[in-house]
Structure formats: structure tokens, C-alpha cells
Length: 301
Ligand SMILES: [Zn+2]
Image 1 (cartoon, protein in one colour):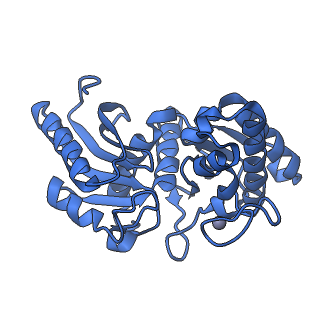
Image 2: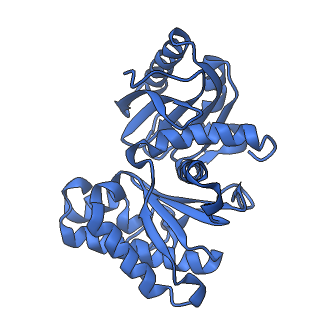
Image 3: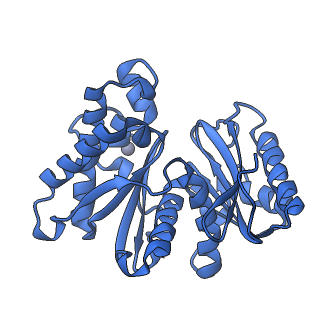
């Protein structure tokens, strides 16, 4: 699907989620100029993805678009340094050499990261474009979809942590002896507010959740954000992902009230939780932002 006329330079963007796979071309002005989206297949995932990517390459070539690099956002677990992924919701991919395969296919530098880190890069890019003077020195974006994760940018750099796993807010404990989490612990945020967790709780897809469920999920998210905000000294938090955006205003209001209630320290008085700027396009813009970031910080990823 062609969305508009492209400028000449752009990034190839790939977002591999539990329910959908998107491939796009995002120009240097942050506009998604080409997008193709499919439901995540249960078999022959690489073959389907390769077909989508080939479509994007053909479109770029036909429209005289110069692709600078390729960014790939994907659900974990993954070993970024080896370019290998084992997404929980793609059973066919275990230690799948995604970066190698993508490089062979596209002939570009390929940068892989988890989708939550891509999300915060998209938000950071958006803020920088609007007004570079208002970009906070530290900011966090939280992804609430099939899984729950976060990306943090501090002093213009993506926070990686010792093993590249910084940002796993989904495993902040929000309920003593709560739901069992895939990580083995009990009461993790992800075990209570991810799409599959909501579905287990209500016996229907998360999109059917009633207002009480949405408010309860927002309240738990706000609680976890308050803890991280105090730890990291940050007040600027954006949230994206299909569950959060689908839950809408009630969810965000509950998260905001809960975060303020649990964040009593003076330096957290401005703690604000809002939806990501690019809404449902954020994962693709985020994948493009990964490619952009890798070019700007060649030694960091
Ligand atoms: Zn956990």
C-alpha cells in the first residue's frame, strides 16, 4: 500500500509482533511512506516476511527511494549481539538468525532491537523534531501489548544495561503472590496487564475488556511506573502498544492517578503518563528510528 510520495532518503522498517508483522519505508522526516501489514503467520514466518520485505524493496526502487539502513523491532527473547531471535509468540523461530537472513535479503546494514527500545527511540525522534529544547534528559516509553517492556533514553543515549536488557518493566512486581509470570516469578506487571494476561483473566480478547478491567490495568501500570520513575529520576513517560492504546482514556487516566499517588517524592511531582506520539504507527517509526540511531551512534548498538 502506497501512502504518499516519498522523499529520496528513507529507512526500511520492520516490526515483528505477536499478532502482526509490519514492514514499512519511513522517510527522514519520520513519515511512513509505505506500509504493508499482515497477521503474524503460524508457519513459514520467514517466507511471509521475506515476501513483505521484497515488496517494500520493489516499491522503494520504483519510487527512487534510497534506503539508508534497516531497523528491526521484535519481541524477545533475543541475543542482539548475535542477531538471533526466539520470540515467545513465534514458536517456529528459536535462535532464528534474523539479522543474517535480513542482511542477505536487503543488502543493507540491519539493526535489531526489542520493540520497547524501538518505541522510545520513535518518541525521542518525534520530540526532537518538535522542539529539541524540550527533549527531557531522561525519558521512558512503555509498550503494553503481547508483552510489557520499556525503553529508556538518558542523555541522548539508549540505556542498554550490562547485557542489553535494561527496561524490563514488565517484571516489576505489582502484586504480592499475584499471577504466575513466564519468567518464573509471581505478580509481575506483565502477568497482569499484557494482552494474553488480560485474555486469561476475562476469558475473551483484551479488546473486549470492560472499564473495570481497563482501570485496574492502568492502575497497576501507574504503580510500576512510579517505582521506576523514583529509581531513575524521570517524569516523562509515554505508553504505546495495542493493549494500552486500545484501552484508551480510562486506562491512561487510571495510570496517571496511580502513578501520582505512588510517587510522593518532590522531584516526581510532574510525573506524566501519556500515549506515544505516533500511536499505532509508533512500532514502524521505532524500527526506522533504530536504523537512524545506529547510523548516528555507530559504536553503540
Ligand atoms: Zn516476570
